[in-house]
Length: 276
Image 1: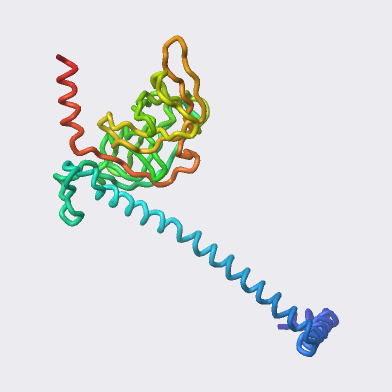
Image 2 (image 1 turned 90 degrees about the vertical axis):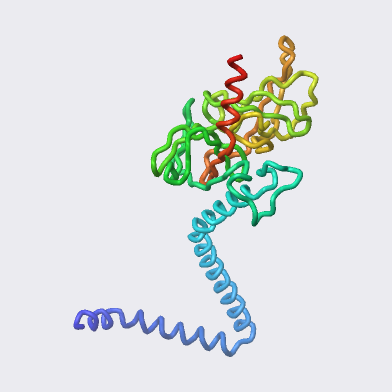
């Protein structure tokens, strides 16, 4: 208490100055219309700015929960799509869909580790066998194709990223339906190469490249990217197409795994055919 009194005594002139300034400002604002309006407008703008910043902070810290809820909802809605039922001409009503009628099953997860600067890039997700995740499941996000699950533990899984030189996927041009093989060349994380598109196909910059549906991993029509540029290999008669990927692998947070219910049946039948 004694130190506080000493402090007041020592700086009493400064505090007196602040008090007089406050009184002067009060009189100026209250008895001068122009200054009063200026003060009110400035105060309103300041208050609005503070409220906006506060609201932005609140929205930012609630994004995690909102994104998780949206991811779960997207996975559920994908499962209910008519193309995920066997009888496409007469899709079952949403409330009557059963495990036997669903063609693909989607499960949401979050990326907890990711690499983009290696030749064999992987991602790690926070779901594993306890959550129904199995090796050889496809991985997608709201923006397109991500990769394929490789290894699984009870609570985690790793997946080969599309940015992996060992990863290849059957892809087609959405405009013409010509299909080829898409792979990453180990260079930019933003681009991949689509090969084996025949030279007579109509190819245009900006056309979408999507999954063909010929693999047992992904449904057809999942976006991969758009054509950035292309050239015709005269010797082989096929285009070499540079595809700008729809996924920003530097900003990958929420994904969904894709399980084709009849994958094993399809693979076993195709293996028998290939062995003939």
